[in-house]
Length: 138
Image 1 (cartoon, rainbow, N blue to C red):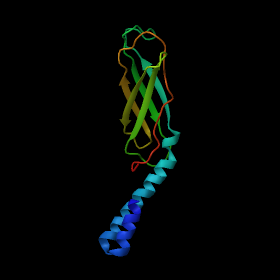
Image 2: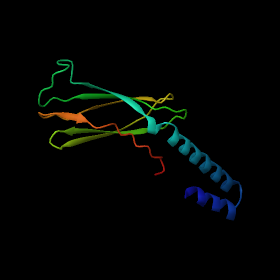
Image 3: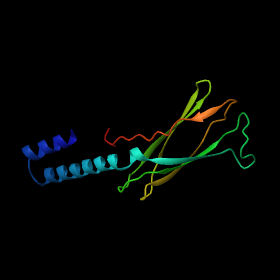
Image 4: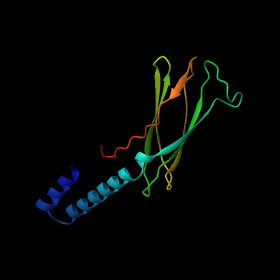
């Protein structure tokens, strides 16, 4: 839609400014299309959980868990930022959503760290990682 407006501006107005605007919007659209297809949908990650230096494997009611997520995004174009959504589900249907953004380096690697609220007794599990694969113009 934006590209069509710029094209109409070039056709009806003409001039250097309209051509420059059309060329910049075209390059931005090409970049977003290539970045959307190249790697965000195939992102892979490793989640590490730690409850603190006192006790590594044992959790008590009321403990908080430190979660570290290492994310690798394949592709050859750098991305300005990536939004990661993690869902922690409890056996009774409760869930917590953690939505964070990270800035990957030039190779597409990034690390994200967050802490859960104090947990109650019961079994809990993380849902499959969700890295929305939308373009920045949606």
